[in-house]
Amino acid sequence: MQHRSVRELMTREVVTARPDTPFKEVAALFHRNDVTAVPVVDDQDRPVGVVSEADLLRKEAVLPDPEDRHPGRWLRPAEQARAEAETAGGLMTSPVVTARASWNVGEAARQMDRHRVKRLPVVDEAGRLIGIVSRADLLQVFLRHDGAIREEIVHEVLGRTLWLPPEAVSVTVQDGVVTLTGRLSRRSLVPLAERLCRAVDGVVAVHQSLDWAEDDTDTSFEHPRAYRAGDS
Image (cartoon, rainbow, N blue to C red; front, side, top):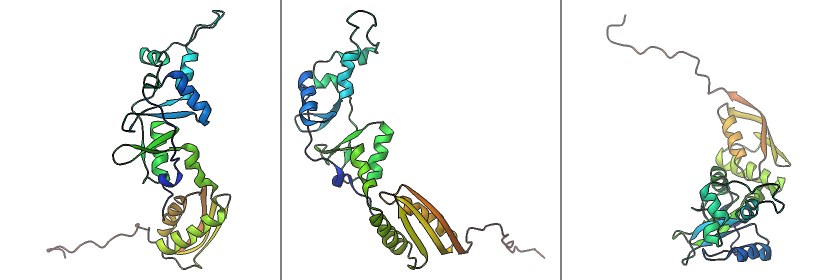
């Protein structure tokens, strides 16, 4: 079993800005390239921050109403400085959260969720920018056909990983939802099979009604007491 990697999903031609890129040029980059954020890189192409549409919009948010009916939004001093910035270096969110090309989809998704970001610049071993991966890129795994998901489960999960005979489990996949029916040799294999199926790229949910021949999870019986010298 192998998840799709960031290398397979990332965009390689990345639109970037420099710390001294003017505010209006950043806005023009968004418009010309139909993007909503750009990494800011130094002279060695190492990401030092990210500027998004939200960063530019902050400048509009702090402006007072032309008719003086509503004051501009109040910001903390650091945020106020970013709102007043004139270049990408002042506007950007820093430090930047990055990913590696070798990461799988799950690792990248956890990084995004942990740091609450929508995209990750991808860097090499030297920290240089080689791509960018977004939430939309990671969600491509859910576009997998049901047949491809079923084939991976049957051959990789049940066959090569759990060494189950083909007739042991019946697998159906509908809109990414996997249903497992059949009989396994041991009860402990049931949650393992379910967990491994959930880990397959493109799986939305797993439902199972699996039976078992032997309950190897029952620990209710008492072990005989060990014999000690002096016991009668």
